[in-house]
Amino acid sequence: MKKFHNIENRDAVLAYDAVEVVTDESGEPVTRWDGRTMKPSPVTGEPVPDETARVPLMRYTNARKAEWQTADYIVGNPPFIGNSRMRDALGDGYVEALRRTHDSVPESSDYVMYWWERAAQLVREGKTRRFGLIATNSLRQTFNRRVIERHLSEEKPLSLIFAIPDHPWADTLNGAAVRISMTVGEAGEREGTLGNVVSEARGDADELSVELVERKGKIFADLTIGADVASVVTLKANENISSRGVSLHGSGFIVTPDTAAELGLGRIAGLENHIRQYRNGRDLTGTPRSVMVIDLFNLTPEQVRERFPEVYQWVLERVKPERDQNNRATYRDNWWVFGEPRANLRPALAGLKRYITTVETSKHRFFIVPVR
Image (cartoon, rainbow, N blue to C red; front, side):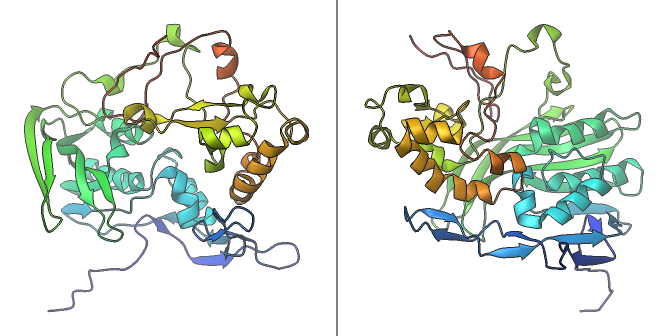
């Protein structure tokens, strides 16, 4: 083999002159939980964040977009890091520098979209003929789709000439089964080939056998052919008649019916208003877990401790340790309530015996109406 010096080991999306440790007023390094290391709770024995596993906060000086070498084709499999995990996986300083230098990529986007944005720009500028990237199947969801939509709708547009929106993938590092998408982009107005998985099977050696059905036509940002539902605009008549459900940001809020009874449900007056049935997206699309959730919205810690002491102790031991390590101050300070309690949704549901739900991330849009 010959050395052509054309293989580099460096950051693909962010360039910088130096990385410095952030220090406080006394010159000591500012640190955070490493986002991974857990320890058994001394009270419950359950895994909780290990506050001694610290990593320093870093500052990236003269941060800027990384330059890519001229190439006819770009092929990549960027890291599968979702938006919600970026700070834990990459560090606050890195994420802030990345977002600051890539203002064309919405902050709600996954890490892979920084590759997608750069590759699409180079192809549209005529500096690269085509690109092909692997991403998770969340590529077609709203928060990532905004990047794709912009490039497909520009005056000098990009076209998707090949795409598979949902394909099985075996993570060789930890053996996890994940779902991916594949996209190939080329400049100009062009039709493409869309592949949809119709059957899949795993063999004896863990290899995947997949059967695809292909269609040709204009591929839209949601990786479909047909009606361009991704380009629809907001209907003002629907304003404020729907809402996202609550986001817990703490697995300790979820309890079994038996645990709920031990905490006082059915025994302590008023607790039935704060421990109730719970369903998330997976419960609605699959087999429900028959779990309940502790909802302490509109209560202070003092009120919880006085009225429901067992519940207070439960969330203190099982929710607070996790929240204490959260980067968002509101989550840390209001550790006893859901991270996103949806204060506007609650009065809208007051007095209703039932309401319609849909799972935002489901493959197909379907609606669930509880049976009376």
